[in-house]
View 1: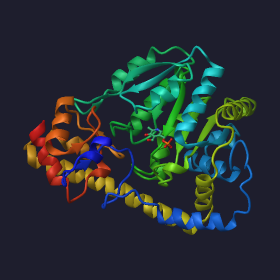
View 2 (view 1 turned 90 degrees about the horizontal axis):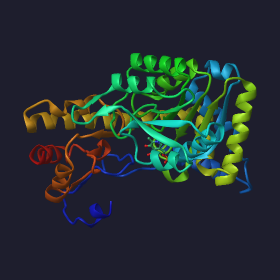
View 3 (view 1 turned 90 degrees about the vertical axis):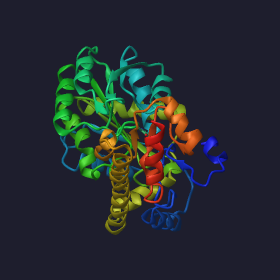
View 4 (view 1 turned 60 degrees about the horizontal axis):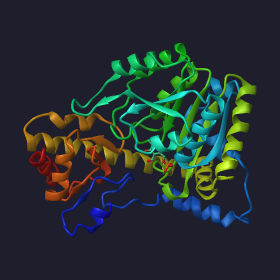
Length: 380
Ligand SMILES: Cc1ncc(COP(=O)(O)O)c(C=O)c1O
């Protein structure tokens, strides 16, 4: 980020950041969020604490949005939700819960995975191991290798799974693969820890929760880390939740009580402002409709840029190597090129991405796409 800022070139392109950007390169406050914020501020009469679990109405709405209104875990009262400071807060509280309940458990994370997963989960003292997930050079999932490795995991181990819009690869499981994974988790007594940070960015709120709902219906226990940083654009307001599903009501109650104890020992109470805005939107049909339209616009813009970049790369290189970009989901894809190529793109063409060649498709615009495609064709 510092190198990008210091680069005086007028043609520089930032594909490195981890936030959504519109066609003008801005990360806007959504109109629905702005309106909800006004209403929240107008109604607010105190800054006193809310509660250790945050807002009840937020937690209820999140649970319904993630699991759906009729999920068995909710019907059987086995789901408990607490508001957390963003998805990171949920991941961290979840990690501490695992550490307290099963200190010997290994957490299996995808190879590759989001860079923050390692510190967020590892600093709780848990052992992390990687399972094969994606081959960046071949641009495809390593699903068989993934199942093979998870088949050998110890009973009671935890498997961290990106619910949709895998970061950094953009490669998600299809419905059959979700089904096979859910069956393996249930049969091998593995505990899924689902990371849902991009609900609505791939196919819509319902479609993007399908994998989570499927897995949660087939296992006795699960954890789900939810983030509203991206889909509500609430990044700095730290708005998220941790959903715990227990084997029965008593176990679920115990999980919630532990979660709150852990939260108390880290940050005491979650911040309220973002959750108040989110809860206001979720409870107000008109605002919710407006938000869903804005979410669809973000989703469509990213999908459009994926198609556009893939087409320009096909033209610039004369081969279909980069066609995979069109088919992947969410903001990120791995270009799948060497560190040297990433450096050439930066030093010779002023195009910035992470050294593993993760690029944020929300940094592409119709204006810069030809420039980016030609540079990639030359640098790789
Ligand atoms: C895979 C993944 N999980 C979780 C998060 C949580 O983000 P936040 O703590 O900002 O809500 C992110 C954000 O970039 C992410 O990419």
